[in-house]
Length: 346
Image (cartoon, rainbow, N blue to C red):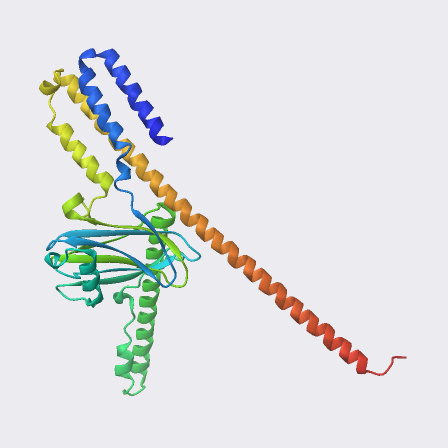
């Protein structure tokens, strides 16, 4: 429906521009075809959606050249618990050694992940349920000074020094806690408010085959993930691999920049104005598509977490009710037994 609406908008733009200046018909029509193609470009760049069964994994394999940048993107869409483990490892084998799927499977069976200067062994927990950021090593509180002072005499100066040391450690602890809270709030905003996926970028230390895997824990999950390569899509200003939408946008900008008014047979003033309007229209279209995708992910996370919270609340209510009935039944039984053994009153 959105694509049809955008296509109607493009058609209306072509009609108005042609009526205003017939000489611009051929140029505007060609530009309109470029914009219409943008409406369908997401079909190529849709991330892979895969259901990962409990205690199993699903993987993607791809070839990377030496010092080639690769970006992994992952987003957990559904499951009883939005948790999974992402691993990125390689090189599994040399590119020349793999000519079939059986060769890749053989190399995979003999491969042992080990982080070094010539290999990658990255692993992290994707927790879209609670979104707790990892704690940096710098956040740990160093209390070695207390151990060094244990053998000293407990004079007044030593007591004062220990007091200052405890205050310093308390300040470090509070600063580390505040930093973790800020990181957690930022991560929550990225996923819950902006609908952004988890992203990790590496530079291949060696040429070969690499794999990215999603492993489920105790529950089945549906994951949307992909691995993008610099050789296919190029890099953006953040030194991450472009998305397919960004790649297409850059390529179409280059095509428009190479075109000239003389080739189109129109005035240079009309050409420049139309090209600027077209670039703005395409950028706006790309922004709308990105916002729609992020909104879809944000709503998905909200729906899943709300469903999980409701399930936990129902389970808690049932357990409370069963416990109350058990305690009440025991009390009734105890009272009846007590009265049955007591002498008659009066």
